[in-house]
Length: 287
Image 1: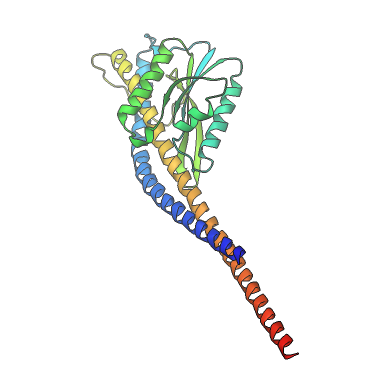
Image 2 (image 1 turned 120 degrees about the horizontal axis):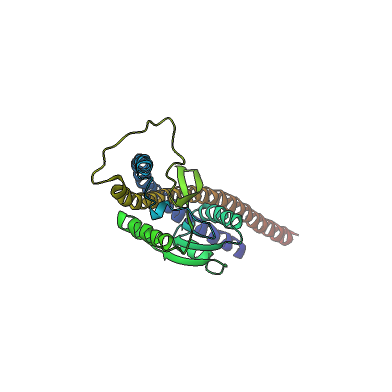
């Protein structure tokens, strides 16, 4: 009978766990839908700003802006966006795997990190990589002010000459079940690369000058890229967490079914044993 009590206790424990994972799934789904809306809305703005900057850079070719300056990439900075919390499947693991590949590709160079999210900070705490800046508990309030702070710090590190290139690493939201790790160069900004040839070149009139506008827009563009990465990462994290909690909930249900079957079999065996003992006792009395 003690075995029956243990099984019953375990069934109760798994049921409580299933309630928690189901609740976490619903919370993640609500957060993901909100983040997905922000991601979809901001993507056209990011794309159009890139187009304008390319046009501006073409007209300001005589002036070399610090964010367009190409150097020997002896030192690089990786701006890494992870999560503050776990229980989101392979979200962080895939991100760290991609970042490690980038670091190995640049072996022999000075590697610096700016990490967004507690998980990235913990992962690289004991590794041979210097963390320049860290931003934790960011998910409490994702806004332009946070993006502005992160981008300004990254720009300062690049302009100071401490690093020669800045890469951005984050998970781009595709769907609930699909998040793609993105690793791309953020600084120096390419003035003529990655331009869609199908997009016609627009000749703008600039006031006061293309150089003055370019100076402001380049900084703004970095901020937009960082803000977009924050949104993409937040949506991807919650999508991954929603899928993970859905899988955990289904696994808990299957475990409850197996334990219930095990409980019923044990209970049936116990009843059968009791009946045999009663019958054997009755036969002994009759004999």
